[in-house]
Image (tube, rainbow, N blue to C red):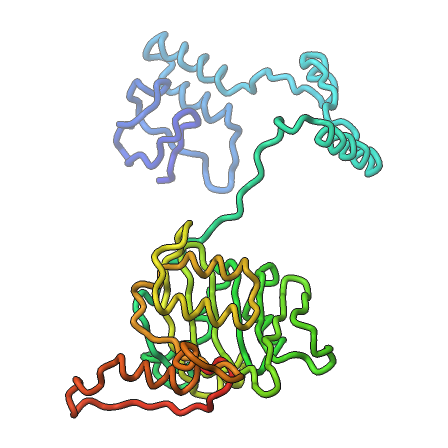
Amino acid sequence: MTDWTCDACTYINPVAGRELSLACDVCATPKPHSPSAPAGQEEDDDDDVGGILSDSSGESDQDEDLKTALLLSLQPADVSVVEEGEQLAEDVLPVQSSVPAQPSRAELERQRLERLALKRLAPESSPLPPLKKPTLAYPMKYAEGTTMLTYLPGHSRVGYARFEDLVNQSALQRAVLSSFQLDYDWIGAKFPNDIKLAILCPRFSDLPPDKKQLADGNTLYIFPPMGLQGCMHAKFLLLFYPSFLRVVITSANLTDYDWERLENVLWVQDFILHKDPPQPSRFGEDLVNVLTQMTVPDSIIRAVRNADFAPCGATLVFSRPGTHKGADLLRYGHPALAEAVRNLKISDFPREDTTREQFASPIWAQM
């Protein structure tokens, strides 16, 4: 027995000899199954429906009504198709294009110039205040005096320091550098261009003997006086940060060779900066004295005086070319070194302690 499908409700597969148990509203009245057309013979949909309903036409008038309703439901709906551009255009209000023509580049430039002119003519109180340059918080790293070596690749970082560990470019405000030899390209890469530098070094060979300073942009070269004999051999860094001064005394010249290929020694300590000079200390007075003898500008010396050197436990020993008498005899060179050793009271140290020594020639400002 073939499957029979109701065109209204699509219920299928009735069982032979049994009435439909599932039906749509039209087929709600149970009725015997009607066999389908023989194989190979196609019947019209209307004929199928008529045949189905005609089997039960004599049972009641309700069946006739159901047949009529079913035939009407199978008729195509009277739906009119609106052709594009006809009725739709009549019912819908016309919409005009709201996208204006793009202005020319000349018009855009004219508008930009007008806005710029308005900004220039506006009163000073109208624009927003300018953004302040951010000040990065850079804390003190060496509150106590620390002795280290310059870092070499392949060595442990413990007890070593790179130049970048001492010079923080983002927080540094200005610096005083002293060196016997200079690598200008290397120095330029280590310090930002907007940082004011004062570099103490031997006088350039092409300058006259009476030339004490040479300004080059943000860099001021200072040539300490040598007298008849002497050599400008002092090597130190004074690094001014927002809240403290970092003092670095080292045996390394300002060259990549000394800082990145040789193992040089350095001593470093940070000192808090105050608005007014604190109580003087021995280390601070000795540092100001050597800067004065090297003809460093007064503005730098005043800034150094604002540092609190009281926590410093080191003794600054330096040499100055010339003949010294009286109180100056113990202030420079080997006599000053001997005085510093006596103040250490080495005789009170246990004999098993290791004694460290460094030998250097008694030349100008050897520290």
